[in-house]
Amino acid sequence: MVNRPSKTSQYELLDRERPWADRTQSSPAIEIALPYGITICKTGLNIPEDVDVALDQWSAIGRTLASLSSGIQWALGDWYAHGFRKYKRKIEAVAKALGYELDSLANLGSIARQVPPSLRNEALSWSHHKVVAPLPPEDQKKWLERAAKMKWSVRHLVKMMDDRASRDRDEDPKLRAEYWADNLIERTQRAMPPTGRVLSAVDLVLLDDRTIEEILVLSRKVSSVWGDAVAELERAKEYAYEEGRLV
Image (cartoon, rainbow, N blue to C red; front, side, top):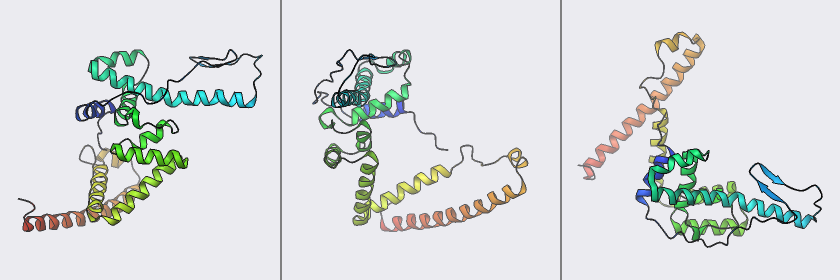
C-alpha cells in the first residue's frame, strides 16, 4: 500500500508552488434571505405550517438552497486558503474547534486555489470544477464552458475529458509513452507490500491449503509478468545509454 501524503501536506506543496492569484469574485453575493418567514437553521429549514406558496415560488426557494450548497464549498475553500496564507499551521486549532476535519478543508482549499474565482462557472457544481482543477487555466475555462453549454453531468464531463485525452495520446507518441509509464509506476507502487513481505509464517498457518495454492499460482503469474517487465526495462535502459540519452 502506497503511503500518500495527507490533503494538508498536498495543500502546503500547492501553496509553495502556485502564486497567489487575484481572488476577486466575479459572481454576485448569495442572498440567503427567504420569503414567507422561512428560515435556515443549523439543523435544517424551518417552514411555518401556515405557509402556502405556488409551485414556481417553492422551486425558486429550492434553487436558492441549491446555490448555497456549492457556494459554501467555495466559501470554505477560499476561507481556508486565506487563513493558510496568513496564519499557516495556526489555523489547525481553529478548524478543529469548528468541527471540521483539517484534510477536508485542505481539499476544499486546494480546489479553490487551483480554480480562481474568474474561471468558476455559476451554472456548474463544485464537483465539476474539482474535475478540471488539475488542468491549466485555459483548459479549465474550455471544459467548464462546454459543460455548462451542453448541461453535462459530472460523470459525462469526466468521460468527455478521458475521451479527449485518449485521442491526444493516440495522436502523440510522447504522450502515449508518458501515460504508459505513469500507469506502470502506479501499478508497481500498488503491488509493493508495505513491509517488504506479503504474508508472514503466522499468516500462512491460518490459511487453508486451497487458499495458499491460489495465492501461489497468482504470485507465480505476477512474478513472471514483472520479470518480463524488468527485462524489457533493462534493455530500454541499455539502448538509452547507447544512444547517449543516459550517462
